[in-house]
Length: 193
Image (cartoon, rainbow, N blue to C red; front, side, top):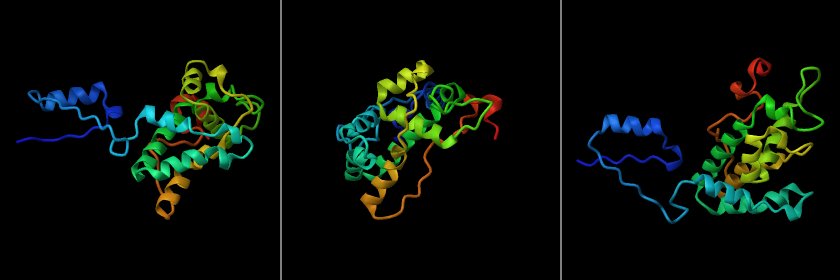
């Protein structure tokens, strides 16, 4: 008897491999790579390729900047919209921390004054909107967070793509919470509201 287990490659980690080895010690693994992106899950690489579609030549009109991304996602399978939302939420969550908030410019986090949780969320969107290289640089060096820059429009890309594709309202909770202070490990005691 053959049992098929499907696990997206981006979800495969050493703990899952160990569990499978313990559960099925004599099993063989067959890796199936989909060449058709519409059949395959949205990969990390593909996520960044989609982010690169942002049209910065239209800067000043956020709707036009995000339009190529919305058009691309709405032309593909619905699940890619959800997977895009999941990957976006994962990256926003990774940037949700005091060390990042302290480096966003004039509105940076400080214990002595008001801190806009929305502005910080939009600043994290700006970091991701600037692409994979910027995102990874900021993870390594928080001082590289964009200063006094936000890009709220990125938040609405999944809902706009879904509504364009299906004609229905978007009602999807992504894999990670995106609100400021959601990543408790990034805030310590300051994260308690």
